[in-house]
Length: 136
Image (cartoon, rainbow, N blue to C red; front, side, top):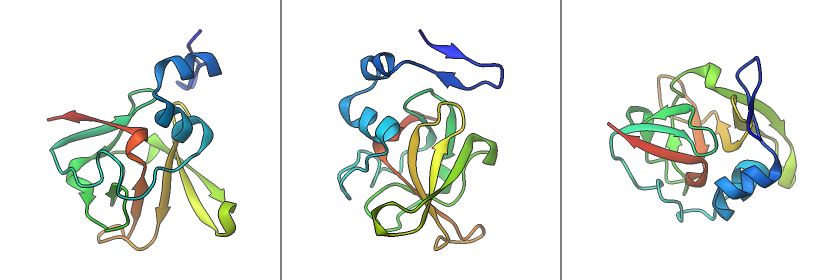
């Protein structure tokens, strides 16, 4: 049973997540997997709109902040609102990175790096499977 807690978080059972998400979405959002580079639906898409969390629908990124970083995943210079993202230290795979999570459902989105364009200097490197585009 889906539950929305007092703080607005979405909590679902593993069975509910598996029923609602594709296998790739589940692997990325719930198991912190990563798509192979250059394979995601939104890597080279620049259609106008808002990218929302594929797990809970929370607005995360605007197409206005999307850029082609050449990294193989959709890249954004800023979220629509910093409150929509949580960050965690990630020392997996022999490197130190900052993991980016949806603040509402705690779904794994990708990572943020400090090698992006101005004015933020950030590159949010996000898995396409973690996103859904709501066209303008």
